[in-house]
Image 1 (cartoon, rainbow, N blue to C red):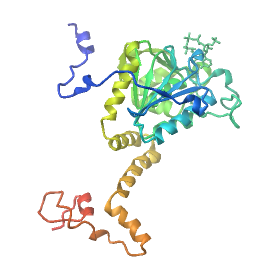
Image 2: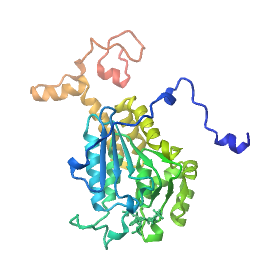
Image 3: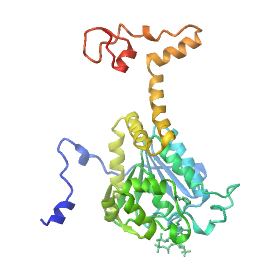
Image 4: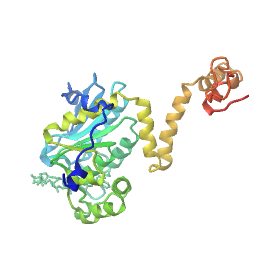
Amino acid sequence: MSEHAARKAPPPTPRRDAFHLTSCAPAAWQDQSTALGLTDVIYRTAPEEGIAKLSINRPSLRNAFRPTTIRELKRCLALAQDDLKIGVIILTGEGDEAFCSGGDQSVRGEGGYDDGSEEAPRLTVLDLQVQMRRCPKPIIAMVAGYAIGGGHILHMLCDLTICAENAVFGQTGPRVGSFDAGYGSSHMARLVGQKKAREIWFLCRFYSAHEAQDMGLVNTVVPLASLEGETLKWCRRIMENSPTAIACCKAALNADEDGAAGIMELAGNATRLFYLSEEGKEGRNAFLQKRKPAFRALSTEMKSCAAKRCNRQVSSCCVFLGLCIR
Ligand SMILES: CC(C)(COP(=O)(O)OP(=O)(O)OC[C@H]1O[C@@H](n2cnc3c(N)ncnc32)[C@H](O)[C@@H]1OP(=O)(O)O)[C@@H](O)C(=O)NCCC(=O)NCCSC(=O)CCC(=O)c1ccccc1C(=O)O
C-alpha cells in the first residue's frame, strides 16, 4: 500500500464499538408539511425513532432560501426542539443537486432579502443561525450536491455534516457582493483554521466532498445512494446516548465562541439540573411555605461521603461540592 493510500484508509472499527451494527434502514417518515401549511420546507418526523428532518424544498433553484424559507425553517426547528419525542434533527435539501445555494438572489433587495412576506426586509437567516446554535438537540447536515454561500454556512453551523460524494462546498459572497462576518467567518476559521478560511472567502473556490473532509468541514463522505441511510445510522447512535449529556456537550462546545450567550446556555443546563436537586427544591418549598430554607439539614442521613475520604454521612450539598466535613 502506498503511503498516501495508507493515510487515507479508514482505521478499523474497534471491536467493542458496535457502531457498524447500527441500522441504516429507511425511517418511517411522517410528513407534517401539509398540516403546517408549508410551501418552502418539508417537515418530516419519525417519532418512534426520535428523528426529525427539515428539508428545503426549492430544488429548481438549488434550494436557495428566501424569507419564507427561513421563516418556515425557524418554525420547524422550534417544533422539533420542543417535541419531547425528538432527540436529533436532520437539515437537508430536496433532491440530489443541492443542500442549499444560499440566499435567493432574485429577491435580494436594498436592505436584505424581500419576498413580500416580511414587514421589514433584512437578513433573517442570521436569526436561524442563532436558533441552531441554541437548539439543545444535535442538528446533522445531510448534504448532497451544492452547499454554497449562506447554504454553506448553514451546514457549518450544524453539529455534524454527513455528505455524499457529489457534494460541493464553497462561499461566493465576494463574487455576488455579500459576506457573513458572523459565524460564517469565526466558526469557519475554528473548523478549518485561519489560513484556509481566508482562502475560502478570498478566492471563492468550490471544494469537493473529500477536500472538505480533509479540511475538517465534514464528518464523513459516503456514496450518494447511502447518504440518508448513513445519516440515520448516526442519528440512531446518538439516540442511544444520554440527551442531557449531549445537550450539555453541545452547549460546552459552543460556549467559548458564543461569549456570554454561550455561557448562559451551558449555565442554564446547570440551573435546570440544580432545580431537580433536593437543595434546589428546598429553596422553592421554603418560599412557598413561608419559612426559612434548611439547605444544610437536607439528606444528611441519606448520602455517604462521595469523596470516600471517610465513612461519615454528609449533606447533599457537600457531596456535590466534593467537600468532606470531618
Ligand atoms: C449553486 C450553483 C453552483 C449550481 O450550479 P448549477 O447546478 O449549474 O445550477 P444553475 O443552473 O446555476 O442553477 C439552477 C437554477 O437555480 C438558480 N439559482 C441557483 N442558486 C440561486 C440563488 N442563490 N439565488 C437565486 N437563484 C439561484 C439559477 O439561477 C438557475 O435558475 P434558472 O432560472 O434555471 O436559470 C449555482 O447555481 C450558483 O452559483 N448559485 C449561486 C450561489 C450564490 O452565489 N449564492 C448566494 C451567496 S450570498 C448568500 O448566500 C448570502 C446569504 C445571506 O442571507 C447572508 C447575508 C449576510 C450575512 C450572512 C448571510 C448568511 O450567512 O447566509
